[in-house]
Image 1 (tube, rainbow, N blue to C red):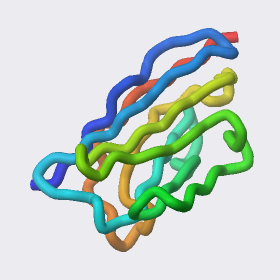
Image 2: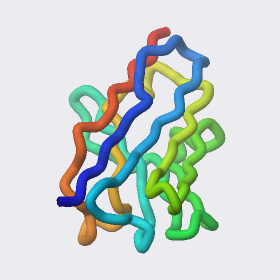
Image 3: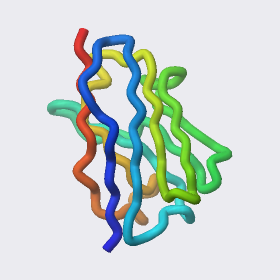
Length: 117
């Protein structure tokens, strides 16, 4: 059964950095554009970054543009999110999944990111 496993979260002070990883098991996501999503306290889940199948095209929410970088390694079936200049408003549980909802797998457990001021 396909499974997405996010890791790399933690607690940092504002201005700090974290690198998140998302590995797929049981199935490959190489045919799909991928996204990183987040759900903050009391908020809806939102997409913050996406990357095309071969990594040539990336897109970011305005709130993270210039601070976050998404990348992927299809040979390792892994997607990454480098987060720099973190802000308290970045505090959320971060998830990865296929970008297009129609093709999304079951959501993983996510990884908690907490940014203190």
